[in-house]
Length: 316
Ligand code: FES
Ligand SMILES: [Fe+2]
Image (cartoon, rainbow, N blue to C red; front, side, top):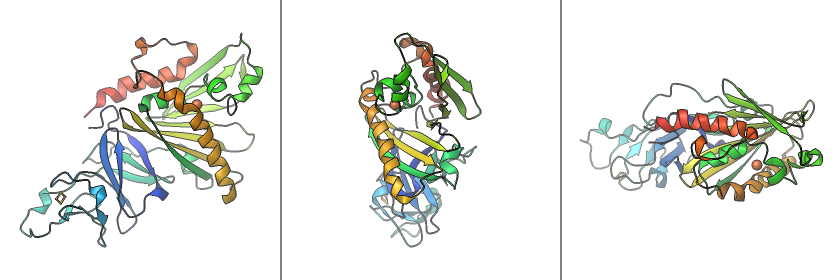
């Protein structure tokens, strides 16, 4: 299961989007249902009733906090344990559970671990911009028709900024770049993934970009003494679709009226990337040897190496 994306923590939904009612998702080809029990804690199960395979996300959460299957009314608690089978008091409920996934709620997001029926060996480690309670955050969501690896590489790619984002985050570089300019892209491995910077003709604009394995990018936008970041959470749906959550975080203009401005800005930048990324062929990034790369591809090649060495062989 979760081929190419197994045994990792990933954000799956915004906390605010998950009320008590069940919500169905596809994550790396697998159907998952999220709901909240009576305590408000999030729960994640494979979205497949063990009885006849029906989507549990079509059911409802009952007063006891169990998710009730819409077909024959079997009830499952947040751990997937079967609590009720109508008309069959003799049934061995302990052998008839749904399959749970590890789930956490951190930083306005619901995270799941992509291995069913196990205890997660680690905890999610979101970048501070996603969790610091003193920051204001905006979340926008998009679905792109591409494999998640193309979207992830786009988020780690600096040399596209003055082209795709010529009117937004790329316009500063356009002011001083010349046809003879040289861009130097650095990459440093870190505990969480990697850190990349790009310098044009030796000029460091101060921006830096972090890759948090497996699928989070954090862009630090340099404003003196201020925190302003854009995070891209690149969530695989299936071979041809990716859900993108863009989370902006800031420590200024925290008023509610400013939310719309920051959200619109994130949306505009993400929408600028869409057509280019969706046009990439093949849809999934190929092995490094099968495309032509140059020095400024350093960060995307670091991701690709991680993808093929760690995620692809780990299908379970
Ligand atoms: S299919 Fe779920 S209870 Fe029968
Ligand atoms: Fe971009």
